[in-house]
Image 1 (cartoon, rainbow, N blue to C red):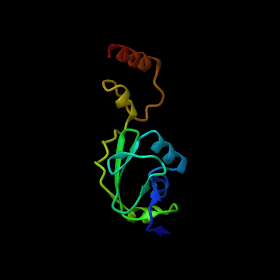
Image 2 (cartoon, rainbow, N blue to C red):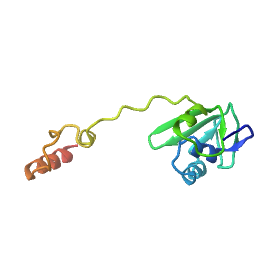
Image 3 (spheres, helix red, strand yellow):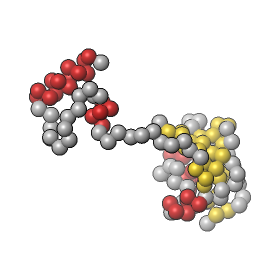
Length: 129
């Protein structure tokens, strides 16, 4: 499954499960969201073991060092053996999305839909910010 010759970066990103589809990996390269050894790359840029690949996804930067070039998509365990993860830790996620939307107004979990009174309080709080 692994090869030692250079491989396209978009194909490798798909094979090690950075992107769900190869077209998503190709699009990320085309839009300049992928760098190989610090330089913006095209989808057909060749990578080899020892190269450093950075990919921006949403609010996170993923940094991998290529250990093995994989031509086909493999399972997660095999993909983990083909990379060295140098990424900074992910930002902490909040459990309640309402805290992100309305930091000063938090409803108890499991209370169901907001009542008319709750909705008015939320709207009043939004207008203040």
